[in-house]
Length: 163
Ligand SMILES: Cc1cc2nc3c(=O)[nH]c(=O)nc-3n(C[C@H](O)[C@H](O)[C@H](O)COP(=O)(O)O)c2cc1C
Picture 1 (cartoon, rainbow, N blue to C red):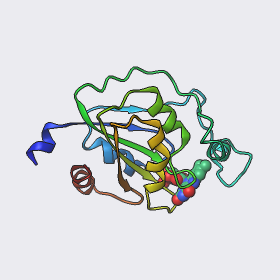
Picture 2: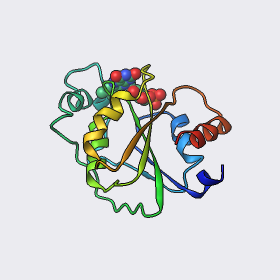
Picture 3: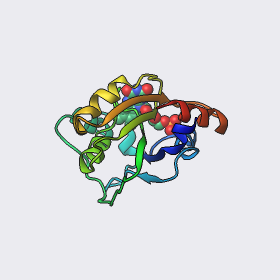
């Protein structure tokens, strides 16, 4: 559609997930970026069944604590839609995504969230957990959980219809 093509897409990713989801944004984004933790996540950090693991603790403390992210400039002038992807942690977005949204100004932007998961197919918990981290004029939209195999064409079609 003409109007959609005129709008610029941007995508931002937080790692620890499958290839398919990355290409979801890549096929429609003309800019990309990654939310980079100051302290990288190790395999042990991601053992989510272990109450002592870093990721488990980050889920438990997500209302009050934020992991530190690498300070990066982010100029979103001219970008109306942002595809923001992450792995679902505890039925919601990881708190590092909150940290990212709190660090930059997304006023007036539409942010389409997408994710991978271990089985959860809903994004309502993620939108709810991210809402307090953006201004009132930012719109958070549920995109899709992109588990499994996706062709480039199917991903492109999804991205076009996601806004
Ligand atoms: C701390 C933590 C919590 C998680 N919580 C959930 C969850 O609530 N629901 C779910 O389906 N998957 C959950 N997962 C699994 C991740 O979403 C999944 O491993 C991630 O999307 C990576 O997918 P991939 O291995 O296909 O790249 C969790 C993973 C971690 C590390």
